[in-house]
Length: 311
Image 1 (cartoon, rainbow, N blue to C red):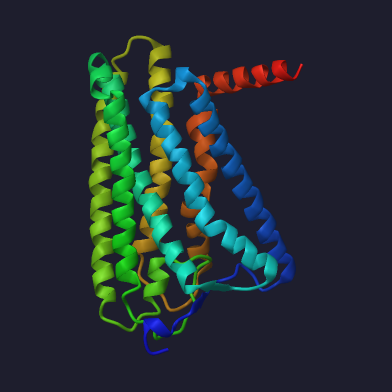
Image 2 (cartoon, one colour):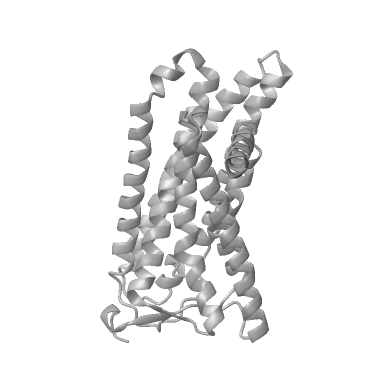
């Protein structure tokens, strides 16, 4: 394979060569995928139907759920299909999609998490200005900005990644097309450009993380001054899940993209990829919304209304 144009497909890494374990992998991923799909769809439906939840915080949560559905739908179904059919192949176009869409969606999600931190900061530290600052138009513009930034981020990485020459085979040491593993197949100096883009991305992520940390330092200092224990608990309950999701994405993503490339396949790479590509969409409905009293109350109200209409 002398250059990138001769590559018509890539071979993804399987979790096992044993047929029974392949079926087990299919079943486990199917369960995780259905949980993520149903959980996030439920959040979207509940927020859309209950006008009491038409607030900035839940508007951003609904966007987060849409991003999570897209994110897990790009990689997991293909991996499931490969295990079920005992194959490893993915088309060149399919590989491009598996690079662009996860980067687009994770980029948009990270910008959205930064916006959500700002939303919590205004709500807790400047409550008198909340309705003016976080009005409907501003929320729509911020969400649109997050989505547009994600598109640009994904396009930048994807265009540069597939501009390289793949002359070291077509076997990707990951269960989906991941940039660090694709760079191992390149013999072109242009991979240095992608490395520079990755470092730029890390710097951008660190800037967003600093903004989030500064916001939460202000939030925590304000919350600690709240005299009511119930008020402090309510404020913390809306912030801690956000920090949990952010920490999971940043830590696993940095490990995957910043660790030195190895010529040998590591099972740890597979585990880390599952952590940052599969678990967040599965966990987000639970740690963000299912523990939220307003979401549970709305869900219970919709369930009762559904049962009453049937009767």
